[in-house]
Image (cartoon, rainbow, N blue to C red; front, side, top):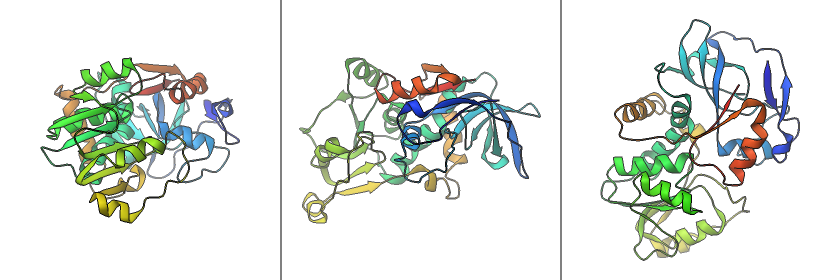
Length: 302
C-alpha cells in the first residue's frame, strides 16, 4: 500500500511516499480502507520533531481518517498513521457517518472540531454574553471556534487573521469584527494557537477574570515565561490545552462529536473544507499549510 513516512525529523521535504505492507488488525481493532486522511497543524510539529511527545522513527503521520471497514461501514476514525491507503483503528475509536456526508467536512469535526469545542467548553469555560477573540480564525480550528462561540452564546466574537481573504472568510462565518492588538475593549476569552509575540500582546488585552487559552505554537517561538505577578495585576489567567489527554475523560469524545455532527446536519455550523491533495503530495500540503496558503480543513486523498 502507499503510505507517507518520515525516517528523520525536519521540514516537509522529509515526507516520503513509500510502499508498505498493509497493517493487520488485532483484537478489538478493524482495518479501514482510507477515503481521506485529515491534515492538522500538529502533524507539522510531529514531522519536525517539536510535538509535545516525540514519535519513534520511522513514523507515518496522521491521526484521523474517513474510510470503509471490511464489513462495509463508512466511518470517521481516530488512528495512528493515517497518511496511508489502509490503517488500523480501535473499534472504540470509530463513528459511523452518513454516505452523503463530505469526507472533508467529517474530518474537520474530529481533531479540529473537538479541539474548538473543548477550547470553549472545557478549557475557557465560556459563558453566554462573553467576548471571545479567535486567533487564526480562518484555520481549521479557528473557523469552527468562531462559529461555535456564536452557537454557545458569545455576545461578541472577534477574529484575528493574516490576510484580506481570511478576513472575508471570518466575517462570512459570523465573526463580528476582525481585530488587532491592543484591543480597545477587553476580551473575556482569547484562543491562541500562534504563541510568540501574538501571545504577549493578547495577554494585555484580557478583561478582569479573562482567560487566554494557549493550544499551539505556530510561530515556533521559544519558551515564553509568564510572571504570576503579572497575572495577578491583570486578574486574569493563562490556560494550556492539549486535545489528546482531554479525550481520555469519560464522555469527552462521543458526546461532543455527535453534537458537532448534529449542528452540521441542522446547518447551524459550516465546516470549511476546500483543500484536498493526493496522498502522494503530502509534502506540498504541509508546505502550503505552513505558508498560510490554506483555510479551513486540509485533506489527503489516496
